[in-house]
Length: 253
Ligand code: BTN
Image 1 (cartoon, rainbow, N blue to C red):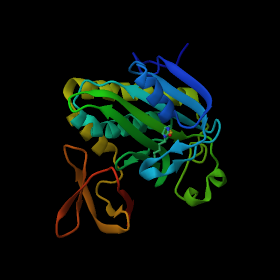
Image 2 (image 1 turned 30 degrees about the horizontal axis):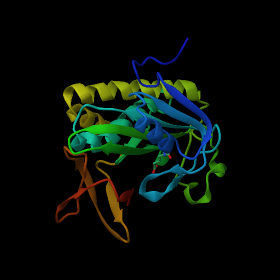
Image 3 (image 1 turned 120 degrees about the vertical axis):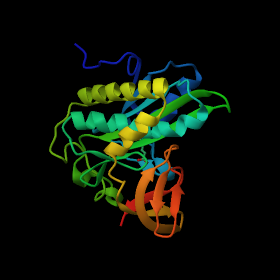
Image 4 (image 1 turned 90 degrees about the vertical axis):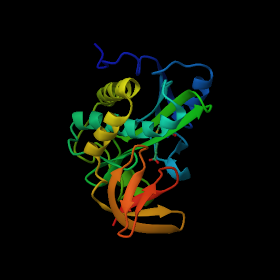
């Protein structure tokens, strides 16, 4: 009587009470040959990794902290779009579990009412020709109360509990894995056009005035679209800038 309706995603599970980072564990077993669809899930992470060398708060049993191992057939050049694919699958799973107005902040945070519910950090190992593995690291806040978040992101973060929903982590994980597998097989069979369109439909960034921040520099403009590579296009009034995810953050102005 399993809630899981996938072919491969989540069929092999490495479950840990506690770990430094599920992404690091996933890397280890991927190098040892773990098969596609394997997930590493932990009750808590001691040193969860976020984007831009930040940490990620991952307290015991108050979220789903997991990493999914993929071995896609597409070329390494396409891999950056996997991060958008991850956001689409996770956002859909979350909507199905009751947060119907969850949306995606470029490139791949999931927000609810302007606050961050999910962070995603994707890693890849590849040669020029072939992807060895991709790891999608996904962290979803389920049971964290507002005043339990570390002070620096207390205002900017939320959880299912904060939004009034007592979600089953097992059902939520199953819903997300189902949506991820669906979107992934579309990308493998037909390419990423549909994934990019799905991303656009779920985005809360497009149409918004944003500040693009890189290091100590920043500029503002209107987020108008993403291009075929998943880069964000920002119209500053005088030009359209193409923003690559890697090292920038954006916020609404
Ligand atoms: C971000 O918001 O900057 C990305 C956060 C990614 C967090 C997840 S939790 C599971 C996986 N393991 C990690 O160490 N990080 C990712």
